[in-house]
Image (cartoon, rainbow, N blue to C red; front, side, top):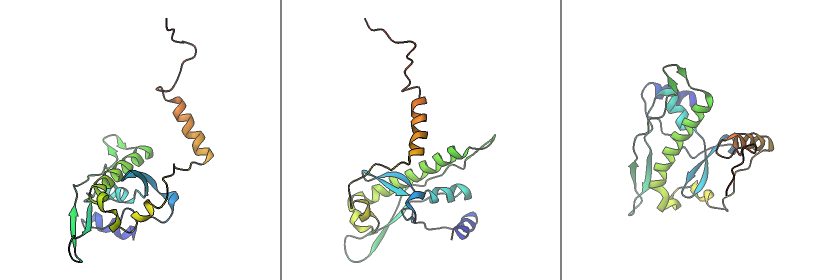
Amino acid sequence: GIATALKQLKQGAVVVIMPDVYKEREDTYQIPFCGRARNVMLGTAVLARRTQATILPMLSDPSDTGMGFKTCFGMLIEPSHCATESGPRSPAVTLCEDYRTTEALFRQLEQFMCQRLIHWQYCRTHYLGKPAPPKLEAQELVRLSALFLKDPRVYVNRNAPMVLE
């Protein structure tokens, strides 16, 4: 399906993607959504970036009367194409930009859905239990701790203490 979607997007076709669906939790990133962290894939942003496509958030909302639906459209999202005049950006920058694009998409979906979450199938699992902090493997925690401790905002120079009189 991905190869077909890439080909169709490059040809200017419209591809409908459900950005909240995933198989493996390990392949997801946490995005703020309705007061909690929601696990989502960055696939929509990656496809848009690779094909220079624009994302149009859209939602089929059950109508207040009858069995029909109305379609709600959000604002266009132009993903970063991760290249500069000097060449492609680093994988870390690309990942951050794909995350930002996905976060913008879910911010718009949140505006449509927040007051009526009961209507969307996958949202019920989002609220089944208490929100848990993300689980980090020991190696990842050590790596993140090293980054944190190198941050100048938390670094304390013990050789030049500040004297308060």
